[in-house]
Length: 113
Length: 116
Image 1 (tube, rainbow over the protein chains, first blue to last red):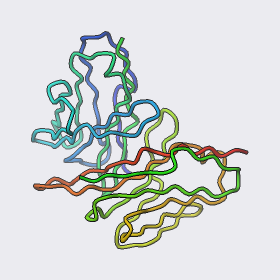
Image 2: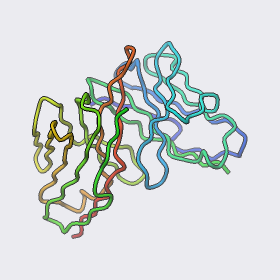
Image 3: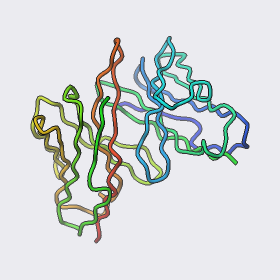
């Protein structure tokens, strides 16, 4: 199957700093990638859809100025959490579709102190 | 948009018994329904999926059934083993608009515990 990687796997940062998370499709090209957030013991909540070469589409309630998404190439999408606060602490997972199946990255655990 | 309900939220079974998880969806246009297994701290892994032109699909000990009329689909695990313990999520593919490919809407998950 297709492989999606994510980096870093975990990050601890101080409140007010920005954190960038990378999502890569390793063996296929993805014009669209998805970013999810998962709080403990909860389901995956779609934050935004990342489109290569165009603006991301954000779900209702997700601040586009706080969660910056850049889909610079067919294999890379980045999510930047700007001015992170403790309530942004969560598990962030990206995914990409290959042959109509959605594959997930390993996730990035963010802890904001 | 699409809404997916999943039940039960927790399920405990004895090793060797069967486990059934049920989901309902709201958008009759949805046509793809995957099931994911997520172990603690790990990524969701696709275990089986079904498309709306099929009523049932089976892969060894797991099977999925789909009732389009009632808009519900179920995951069946037979001969459960301790390693089946995980959180299972159902999902429905929400159609996209304006040329977008759409996205998956997930249920809230079922924590399955298989006791040896």
